[in-house]
Length: 289
Ligand code: SAH
Image 1 (cartoon, helix red, strand yellow):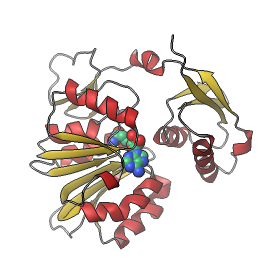
Image 2: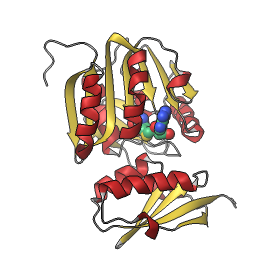
Image 3: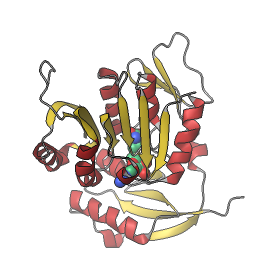
Image 4: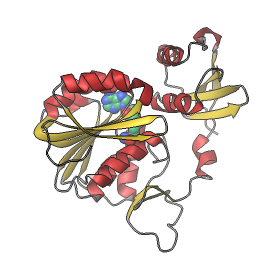
């Protein structure tokens, strides 16, 4: 029996858009949510510090003035295997037509065709169920990185790195600050029989200032703003930057910063409350907005 613990936090739902709330909680690293009537019980890894949770509660307060962080108590609880519970519900699916995702223990339906991604749901975010990942998959499918050099920032489960390779990327470097996520990404690379993806622990500082043709980043907006100068240093002159994890309500916080950095908006993709933005360093003729 595992002696691990996790942190449990009760969040009153009042005033929240549930899609926005769950998206923010997952982007900040929650492991699971139990919907319990007027409140949600949210679980975080034991490694989370109280400060980390306070930052998240502060963000929740900004999106919902009805929310009062001081009402939330954080308690340590014995570990519960969320993956074992949620594994039961993970069936093969197409986040985008022609891209299939399945867990290792399921088979694709007869007649399924297209690109197959095998994802073992562990600690790394990115099974393809969340809109922010789905939008990245949509962007990669629409603009396949054939023969290109790709940087995947915040790789999580490795899902985008694996897809980029399967869509013909020449080389992928994938980084994440979370070692558990990288372990999961490594397992997923093996499951998919994919080579040519180099995993590194850290953020942009572990990536040389080399010339990438595509940079992918599905991370929280604050991180997207913080990393922007580093993205620019690593993008080649004709390179594209594809970002996701942006709530529609935060569009005006992200867009001007990226424009001021000299990037040109190629396309904007959306699903429910979520946005992904495709940027190019150079003005491009003939790409439809
Ligand atoms: N790329 C996957 C996972 C996105 S979740 C997908 O699209 O589904 C975001 C990931 O970014 C998490 O795994 C988190 O650990 C990582 N992350 C957060 N801040 C980061 C930073 N500054 N540098 C690198 N990775 C970061």
